[in-house]
Length: 433
Image 1 (cartoon, one colour):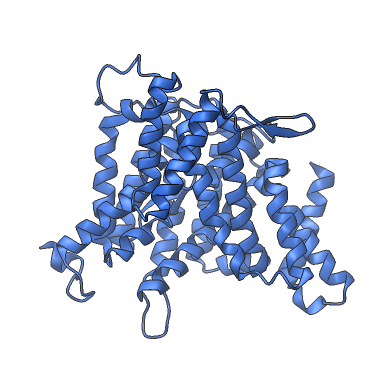
Image 2: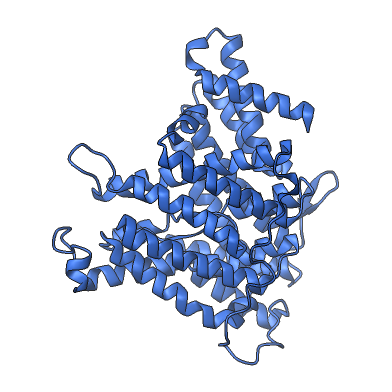
């Protein structure tokens, strides 16, 4: 069977050349995750090389499933925001082990899969009002940017709380700041691989500055690092604890929101909908998302998501699973170039993290900030994430605030029963944890 028949290219008005080009475009837009994800997760004590292999393999498998099962031009990989939640909230914030975090991702993926199979995921979607969904996206973006700035030393510990690091001393902070400016310029010039190029250029500049260590680089290629240090490393000893319950809940609904947002945002933009306006193969996409998170956790990485950078490939003409399959092949090739990715310093990934923060702030456009009943909970949700270094805290406090404001001002009808239940749950958790 030819590629044209396998992916119904004529039916979607595309061609093999267009799909391959779109796949390359998407890959170039999201390849930064190969360096960024291991850098973030390794802060938990996980082996960086093993996490890199897990990141790539899980992206390959998830994207291939999306290509051949959901037949959509979307690429998948370990999601930004999720890796931050994994590292800075669960492990460093709550004091849990990375094995605990992997277990939460694994169990959360199984529950998410069951919710999708039995079509009850919509219930969780209803628990968080649209205003807070958009605020959560913006808050995660600000949190991710804060992590990048802190890791590079641009933001340092006070007094009084935090202050500006030394961005003129020629060290990591200087390199990161230079990288932010360069990456910003690439984005303004609409260079499709801006984030990846920003990482590469910043890493190269870091060599004469002494930030990029190339002393151990003997060859740009090698066999993939073993998965053994992180493969199937689960800890079920706290499976029924309140902490685990809270973490799993946050993982599930963030996964649902993330996938729904990506599907709606990209699919509607290019007409990947049926005659009734429903997104094509959305159920298959959700099932792929759920299974991929389970598989990724088993390998040793944070949840898989549909990357919004898939929009770059779709804009380039990608309409079928062939675009996704192309991305998967390119990711697979990167397994053999891990030495190059491992020399990338944290300062060189900071620009990508900051730009992701910029992208995610776009969700604020749709929030009615003239209505304080919306503006205040949204602001609290957003600001609490970076200040508490916890996505879960931002979500919990934001939902509680949203509910109480409406109850105290007589806007009872705007609070759905499931929202009230979740608000009570979050309040209870503050006393019990």
